[in-house]
Image: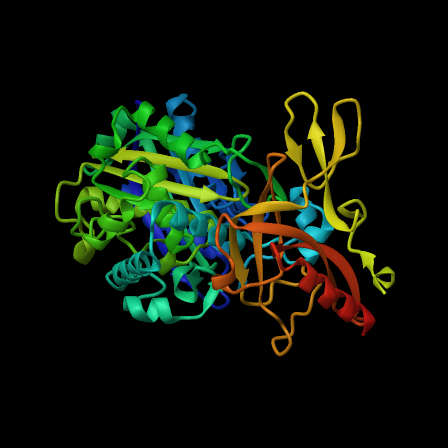
Length: 381
Length: 154
């Protein structure tokens, strides 16, 4: 991706906001992003909006101003934020717009995601007997990973404690109380080996990103961040993925591996060049697995690296510096754009209390979503 | 006694020579196996999976699942946490199912697991038992089936 820059980001806090509508949160996020970019709504030529709960997210134009521009609703489960980003970026790369916007907003009811198995083509008995839960996948994937690569439950707790600690430094996070590892470990299990404090939860919030032709970015800002790659991949036959009554033995790598390799190839950088990363932490185990699946370490090295603080804000590869999904919760449509917001803020050096100490030239975001989608974006200053 | 319970769905499992077996499909073009079975045709044959496989991975469900779609007992006073897992069969397929035990000490990845048929309570206005398949640590099948028979006799 040669000609796309991010000139503005906006984040409505994630949490619970009473009667406030998802679209109102989306409007606030867009207004913050426009102000950050120094452009007005009238200058936006194309938009992409992602939401799980709002069936027509393009209705956001009704909150912003009816300028008649093409505005598209998009959805790819928990990877939705990458889809809106990619499509806005492609619109610019393809010459369809000079300025485009990606926005996501959601307002989920409390509790785990339920739903109807038939929507995913699954038989009724699969739901009736208690197998249709996305959280089982996370528990099962990390349980096997720990068994294969010698990862301990203490490491799960370290990841959770790190993310809640980062959230405590983020005024827009939902969970802003640091927790110690023992309290996390001693909490009741939700799905073995994951305890109650090792999961993110669905909530509410919105995020927006304003993108612009790279050769015009300097007209609006001197703090542009360039989008080097944004790639999404679905699962290949044999990948170990959620909500599968059966899977072939002798599997193939996760779609995260494919998306990551594709993004690094397009961006022309490697894992060793990345200074700060956002990795989908649906649960503490996911963050551990995603470190390896995205090429940042070998399988099993996480046990030592995390104990040494490698993924802390002051470590070699700070991960989820804003607290990630665990501290922010997950409004699905917005979550991936929150990641982009954090990377942009870190690359600009504007992250305040949670600013990474070392160089901050290259940043990375990763999403993983049902029913087996990996998505990666790479940015540079 | 067992005849009083109907399967939760047709075509998932059967009993052959006293052993519970899962009914699966094998695609003729590449030999890949999937469960549950799809209708037989020119490109797919129906097979029975072995009665024993190995535990690929597992987790537990400690809180009542969203209902619907869950049809079991969900009121907090009587909800029983349960375990689920994937068992790898020699036919080259991992199958997901409920496990008969949920104690981490009794569930070691790689251990042998046996296919069993167990009662499952459908809650609601007229609670009743149906049968479904599950996986039991190998060597405990007799015990599991005795318990199932007892439950059926109640």
